[in-house]
Length: 183
Image 1 (cartoon, one colour):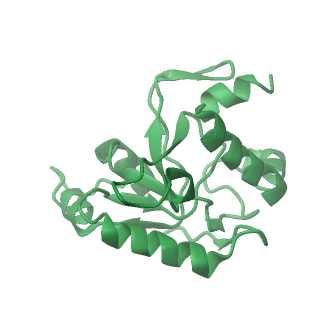
Image 2: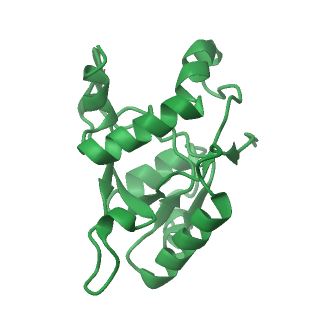
Protein backbone atom coordinates (compact mmCIF):
# COMPACT_ATOMS: atom_id res chain seq x y z
CA UNK A 1 0.00 0.00 0.00
CA UNK A 2 3.05 2.31 0.03
CA UNK A 3 4.90 3.16 -3.15
CA UNK A 4 8.42 4.52 -3.04
CA UNK A 5 10.35 5.57 -6.11
CA UNK A 6 13.44 3.44 -6.49
CA UNK A 7 16.17 4.98 -8.61
CA UNK A 8 19.49 3.71 -9.92
CA UNK A 9 21.85 4.45 -7.05
CA UNK A 10 24.33 6.63 -8.92
CA UNK A 11 26.36 6.86 -12.11
CA UNK A 12 29.23 4.73 -10.75
CA UNK A 13 27.16 1.53 -10.62
CA UNK A 14 26.23 -0.22 -13.84
CA UNK A 15 22.77 -1.37 -12.74
CA UNK A 16 22.12 -4.03 -15.44
CA UNK A 17 25.56 -5.57 -14.93
CA UNK A 18 25.24 -5.68 -11.12
CA UNK A 19 21.74 -7.15 -11.35
CA UNK A 20 22.98 -9.85 -13.79
CA UNK A 21 25.87 -10.72 -11.44
CA UNK A 22 23.51 -10.91 -8.46
CA UNK A 23 21.07 -13.14 -10.36
CA UNK A 24 23.94 -15.40 -11.47
CA UNK A 25 25.17 -15.64 -7.86
CA UNK A 26 21.64 -16.37 -6.62
CA UNK A 27 21.23 -19.18 -9.15
CA UNK A 28 24.60 -20.70 -8.25
CA UNK A 29 23.88 -20.46 -4.52
CA UNK A 30 20.26 -21.61 -4.63
CA UNK A 31 19.20 -22.93 -1.25
CA UNK A 32 21.76 -20.86 0.69
CA UNK A 33 19.92 -17.53 0.59
CA UNK A 34 16.41 -16.36 1.37
CA UNK A 35 16.61 -12.60 0.89
CA UNK A 36 18.82 -10.47 -1.35
CA UNK A 37 18.43 -6.73 -0.88
CA UNK A 38 18.87 -4.72 -4.05
CA UNK A 39 18.55 -1.45 -2.17
CA UNK A 40 19.51 -0.69 1.43
CA UNK A 41 19.28 2.23 3.78
CA UNK A 42 22.93 2.17 4.80
CA UNK A 43 22.30 4.46 7.76
CA UNK A 44 19.88 1.97 9.38
CA UNK A 45 20.86 1.10 12.95
CA UNK A 46 22.53 -2.24 13.66
CA UNK A 47 23.44 -2.97 10.03
CA UNK A 48 26.60 -4.93 9.28
CA UNK A 49 27.69 -5.88 5.75
CA UNK A 50 30.15 -8.78 5.67
CA UNK A 51 32.03 -10.09 2.66
CA UNK A 52 30.91 -13.56 1.61
CA UNK A 53 33.57 -16.27 1.56
CA UNK A 54 34.14 -17.51 -1.95
CA UNK A 55 33.31 -21.16 -2.57
CA UNK A 56 36.11 -23.55 -3.56
CA UNK A 57 37.17 -22.86 -7.09
CA UNK A 58 35.06 -19.72 -7.15
CA UNK A 59 35.94 -16.09 -7.56
CA UNK A 60 37.73 -14.03 -4.93
CA UNK A 61 35.46 -12.92 -2.08
CA UNK A 62 36.14 -9.26 -2.78
CA UNK A 63 34.75 -9.60 -6.30
CA UNK A 64 31.49 -11.33 -5.37
CA UNK A 65 28.39 -9.25 -6.15
CA UNK A 66 26.86 -9.77 -2.70
CA UNK A 67 27.64 -9.26 0.98
CA UNK A 68 25.93 -10.92 3.92
CA UNK A 69 23.59 -8.70 5.90
CA UNK A 70 23.89 -9.10 9.65
CA UNK A 71 22.07 -7.28 12.40
CA UNK A 72 24.02 -6.38 15.55
CA UNK A 73 21.27 -5.39 17.99
CA UNK A 74 21.13 -5.09 20.88
CA UNK A 75 23.67 -2.29 20.60
CA UNK A 76 23.89 1.48 20.57
CA UNK A 77 23.40 3.78 17.56
CA UNK A 78 25.34 6.74 18.84
CA UNK A 79 23.67 7.60 22.14
CA UNK A 80 20.46 5.71 21.27
CA UNK A 81 20.03 2.17 22.62
CA UNK A 82 18.78 -0.32 20.01
CA UNK A 83 17.09 -3.35 21.57
CA UNK A 84 15.89 -4.96 18.35
CA UNK A 85 17.29 -4.25 14.89
CA UNK A 86 14.80 -2.26 12.88
CA UNK A 87 13.91 -3.12 9.31
CA UNK A 88 16.24 -1.84 6.66
CA UNK A 89 13.77 0.36 4.84
CA UNK A 90 14.44 -1.76 1.81
CA UNK A 91 12.32 -1.10 -1.22
CA UNK A 92 13.71 -3.69 -3.63
CA UNK A 93 14.74 -7.28 -2.92
CA UNK A 94 14.65 -10.83 -4.16
CA UNK A 95 12.94 -13.34 -1.90
CA UNK A 96 13.32 -17.09 -2.37
CA UNK A 97 10.29 -19.33 -2.81
CA UNK A 98 11.23 -21.03 0.46
CA UNK A 99 11.16 -17.71 2.30
CA UNK A 100 7.87 -16.65 0.72
CA UNK A 101 6.31 -19.96 1.74
CA UNK A 102 7.62 -19.46 5.27
CA UNK A 103 6.20 -15.91 5.44
CA UNK A 104 2.86 -17.09 4.03
CA UNK A 105 2.81 -19.88 6.62
CA UNK A 106 3.50 -17.67 9.65
CA UNK A 107 1.14 -18.44 12.51
CA UNK A 108 -1.71 -15.98 12.28
CA UNK A 109 -0.69 -15.04 8.73
CA UNK A 110 0.68 -11.70 7.68
CA UNK A 111 -0.17 -9.18 10.40
CA UNK A 112 0.73 -5.90 8.71
CA UNK A 113 4.28 -5.73 10.08
CA UNK A 114 6.52 -4.01 7.51
CA UNK A 115 7.83 -6.74 5.23
CA UNK A 116 11.47 -5.71 5.73
CA UNK A 117 11.01 -6.27 9.48
CA UNK A 118 9.41 -9.69 8.84
CA UNK A 119 12.28 -10.70 6.56
CA UNK A 120 14.97 -9.44 8.98
CA UNK A 121 13.38 -11.26 11.91
CA UNK A 122 12.78 -14.57 10.13
CA UNK A 123 15.89 -14.91 7.95
CA UNK A 124 18.84 -13.47 9.90
CA UNK A 125 21.42 -15.98 8.62
CA UNK A 126 20.33 -16.20 4.98
CA UNK A 127 20.01 -12.52 4.10
CA UNK A 128 22.37 -10.90 1.61
CA UNK A 129 22.62 -7.61 -0.26
CA UNK A 130 23.85 -6.68 -3.70
CA UNK A 131 27.21 -4.94 -3.44
CA UNK A 132 27.44 -2.24 -4.50
CA UNK A 133 23.72 -1.61 -4.08
CA UNK A 134 22.35 -1.07 -7.58
CA UNK A 135 19.22 0.76 -6.44
CA UNK A 136 18.45 3.37 -3.80
CA UNK A 137 15.36 5.15 -2.57
CA UNK A 138 16.74 8.47 -3.67
CA UNK A 139 15.33 11.52 -2.00
CA UNK A 140 11.77 10.27 -1.70
CA UNK A 141 9.96 11.36 1.46
CA UNK A 142 10.05 9.12 4.51
CA UNK A 143 6.98 6.96 4.96
CA UNK A 144 7.73 6.72 8.68
CA UNK A 145 9.09 10.08 9.82
CA UNK A 146 8.57 13.21 7.74
CA UNK A 147 10.91 15.14 10.05
CA UNK A 148 13.87 13.25 8.56
CA UNK A 149 14.04 15.47 5.47
CA UNK A 150 17.40 17.13 6.28
CA UNK A 151 18.94 13.83 7.41
CA UNK A 152 17.79 12.10 4.22
CA UNK A 153 19.08 14.95 2.04
CA UNK A 154 22.57 14.18 3.35
CA UNK A 155 22.52 10.41 3.91
CA UNK A 156 20.74 9.59 0.64
CA UNK A 157 23.13 11.62 -1.46
CA UNK A 158 25.10 9.07 -3.55
CA UNK A 159 28.38 10.75 -2.59
CA UNK A 160 27.57 9.97 1.05
CA UNK A 161 25.77 6.61 1.04
CA UNK A 162 28.25 5.06 -1.41
CA UNK A 163 31.10 5.97 0.97
CA UNK A 164 29.15 4.66 3.98
CA UNK A 165 28.48 1.41 2.11
CA UNK A 166 32.18 1.03 1.24
CA UNK A 167 33.21 1.83 4.85
CA UNK A 168 30.79 -0.76 6.26
CA UNK A 169 32.21 -3.50 4.03
CA UNK A 170 35.87 -2.46 4.28
CA UNK A 171 35.94 -2.09 8.07
CA UNK A 172 33.51 -4.82 9.09
CA UNK A 173 31.95 -2.34 11.53
CA UNK A 174 28.21 -2.16 11.92
CA UNK A 175 26.42 1.10 11.21
CA UNK A 176 26.09 1.43 14.97
CA UNK A 177 29.87 1.14 15.38
CA UNK A 178 30.63 3.33 12.38
CA UNK A 179 28.46 6.18 13.68
CA UNK A 180 30.78 6.49 16.70
CA UNK A 181 33.67 7.42 14.41
CA UNK A 182 31.76 10.56 13.47
CA UNK A 183 30.54 11.56 16.93
